[in-house]
Every structure is written in structure tokens, then in C-alpha cells.
Length: 268
Image 1 (cartoon, helix red, strand yellow):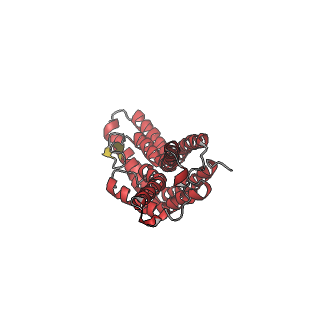
Image 2: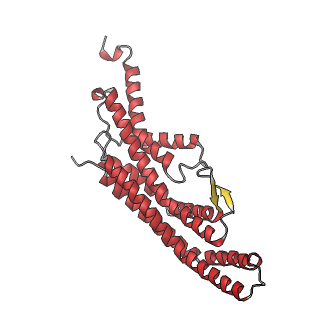
Image 3: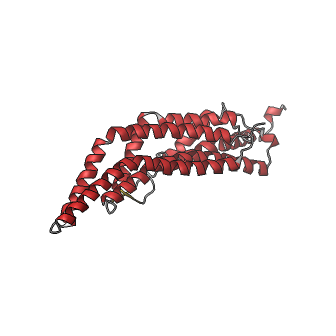
């Protein structure tokens, strides 16, 4: 009787392949859960699971995995935690930097007096000002039209080359990347909202001067409609510049994502 005829060997090989598939799917699965658009509630969990399984099956023959025979339970848990940390960091970096448009829309809505106009956000399930929701949908359209989702997948897949499975990760660099993404979010939101907020401030100053010189004018019946009209006109006139700003935000976010992932790799 040969070795291939021994019972149980085929089952053991299936278990090994299942373990390899599990390890490979951790990074991309965590990225799909935490990334913008892909991790939103608009996309069912079953679709994300199928996407993760398809990417993992594609990567199994292209990714180097440590020998299964040399792995222990502790090393497997360490590798799984490492892969989850990389995938979650990659997705959260994009989510944090893309949240700049929602923050800018919230401040514009507060300045224009539209902070009471809330809409359910399909990404988080919570409430979001209407202008923030419009900005988020606009960013999603620009992101998909520029094939940003394909570039994001390529960056995560390329991370296996300089950050192989089980090679170790510089975790402080991952935390530092989150801090940098947070500061980038606030700076980008300030640049997006500053022109419109400044124009609305001048409109409010003008309304204040008019109501001061003519006290009989009611502020709510006179100033509020003018402010609403002004914000809609400003947003309409700023559509093209905002679109180019969103394009720069997407390109810079993807560039920073690749840079931060490379910075977290441990050089051996």
C-alpha cells in the first residue's frame, strides 16, 4: 500500500488549504469591511463575503504563505491579528480621509442654517446633514468614475509584495498613519468649506446691516430665504471646483495609503 492510499491524507490536505485560504482572506476581507463604499450598509454582507472569497481565491496562488507544518496555534493567531490590522488600517485610512467631505458639508449646512435638514446616512445608518449627504454621494461617483476602487484594490494586493504574510508589521507606524489621516481630514475639510463659508459669512453680514438699517424687516422672513438661496447658488457655481477638489482628495488619499502601508513594513 502506497502513501497516497493511506486514509485521512486527503482530508488533512483540505484542512491545510482551508487554513491557507483563511489566512489569505483576512487582509482583503478586513479592507472590504472598513473601506468606504464597500463597507457601507448599502452593500449586503453576503456580497462583501463573496467579494472577499473571490479575491482570496485569486490571491492564493500569488501570495507566499509560511509553511503550514511550521505553524503553531500561537503563530496562526499572530498572523491573523497582523492581517486584520493591515486590512483594517488600509480601509480606515480611506474612510477617515474621505470623511473630510462630510465634515465640510456639515459646517456649510450649519452656516447656511440647514443643520436641521437631516437625512439617513446609508453608510453608517445615522443621521447626516443634507449637504454632507450630497457631498458624500458626489465623492462616491467621482471615486468610482476614476476607478479609485480598482486602484485601492491594487494597493492592498501590492502590499503582499513588501509586507508578506507572517513577515511582521510595525504597529506604531499603523497608529501614526491613523493620526496623520485624521489631521489630513480636518485640513481637507477646511479647504473645501472655507470659500463657501466665507461667502455665506459676507451674505450674513450684509443681511445684518440691512436689518439693522431697517428694523421693520423680519430676520426670519427676509434673511433666512436669502441665505438658503445664496448657499444653493454657491454650491451650483462651485460644482466644477468641488469635483476637481474631490479628484485631488482621491488621488492624495490613495497615494498616502500606499505610502503608509510601505512605511509599516519591517525591512529585513
